[in-house]
Length: 137
Image (spheres, rainbow, N blue to C red):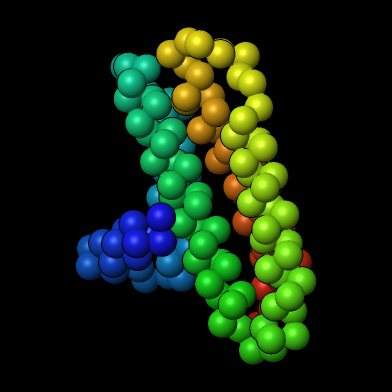
């Protein structure tokens, strides 16, 4: 996954999108795609599923970029053990969340529903990373 994250970030930089912090660009892109997904009436279920997968990838990329900033902030060595334990706990929670049954189980809406729930779950983690672990400038 990390390889695809760096490829996508390189694409953002090459297209001139990265005028803000990379995670900010990812968030803004995700917000625009989310609006499109929920406001476009002519999308097929397959298109909605593909877009929801992309939303999840963008959220995970944003999460990784914030984690990267945390790893490289001054004083990280003082919080490294607790942070890594916190990340491991969260990864387990994400896996459990992904396995939870969907009300659309077995239907064509199930993957889209699962992806969107995971996007919300990752957003909560992003918020937590920013408030709990990221040093204030």
